[in-house]
Amino acid sequence: MKLKNNLNLFSQKDLENKFLNKNLPVIRVGDTIKLGVSITEGNKERVQFTEGVIIAKKNSGLNATITLRRVMQGVGVERVYLLHSPKLKSVEVLRSSKVRRSKLYYLRLRFGKATRLQQRFD
Image (cartoon, rainbow, N blue to C red; front, side):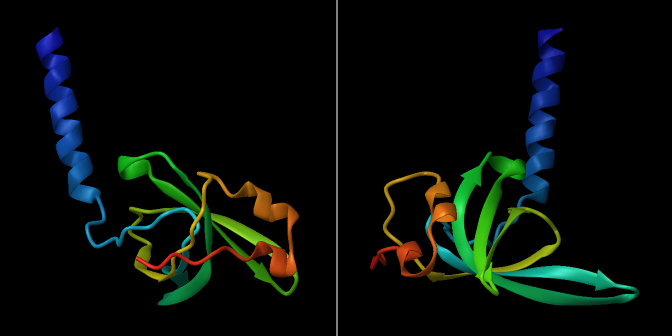
């Protein structure tokens, strides 16, 4: 019984590694990134770019997600993206920030210059 469970776990790890996105840069909470997401409209497919600050990272492995926040026309917009999704075409780190929290949910309550984060140079 135990041997069968170990074999299932081993094959599950191999299966997971097969679908992991290998060309991801190192991204941290507080980074400003530009994401290219594949959008299908009718029978046409295009890449739509989104830029924002990562305010949260959750899970690991194939289920890893990031929460991206940006302010559009005075309204804060947050969206959760799967890091290893086949819809995610490109990830580019534009700016790294020095933060001391793992979740930056406090940025939701701030606006304007109060949302600025100190830049990290390394």
